[in-house]
Picture 1 (cartoon, rainbow, N blue to C red):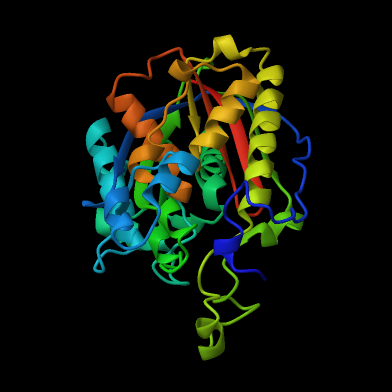
Picture 2: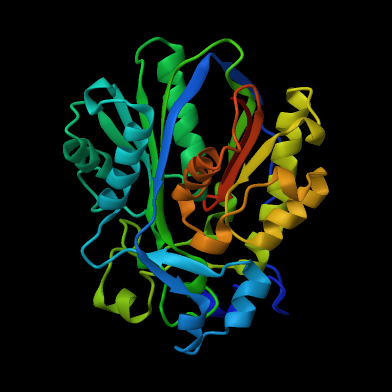
Length: 353
């Protein structure tokens, strides 16, 4: 596999690898569920582009090609469970919900504390909860997958309060020597608690999708059972994230637009009916291109990519919590949510608040 530093520029002259087309997927509706509370956390260590420039990175390239001005990095003492716990605690505090009221904990992450036990179990212990807990791995689409999964338990009446967390320490997955990829990612976490709502609340329409034919476009090659970590894989830097940036960039724009159009059509809504959009915060040019294709204006699209970079599964819940804190989410509004990334996997939906 080619070195990711030669692939991450979406406008490089290198030929495209196979780009998987986003396939039309079934669109569903799931109402009767509401978001009761939200919260987020980002580590205190903020790394600005200027600091990276002093280390030989191109600060102008970072802002022009990605829109990222800074990102947060966890301390050496912090693990994924630590940032997940902070987001969860703030979420519970914001909603006035005690940990004993939580019936299930779902944690979306691709950077767990360890292969087993699940990071969700660590968070459960830290919260003082006795709820069942499990991890869910779908990379940058992880929060959407976890949200839909949690909603199933609410709709069946099995549980009344489900805590859903998206958390990733992406700084642990990127090669510090890779000047095209290393500046793009940051660390953080976001969380929501969902529960029964009115028949006017929940996903008016949503879709989830995946196509493993594009798995090699964005992967962490070594460290699993297919390719266990060895001195040789470490020497080849196969423990770090590798990305075919050009192909992923083009796939993301198309998939984002296609999946959003699917859920809008199913909900009989147009872009003008959307009050706020929460896209996965990967690259400002992906967000701007998709917004333009969909007919969304800048006031309809929430962006905090400039502060946090790409935080994978934390991206959407972190944006949601900040948007709610700023008063940009109100009852009855239509909130467009979309995640997309490694897998290749994606999810989109229109949430009626």
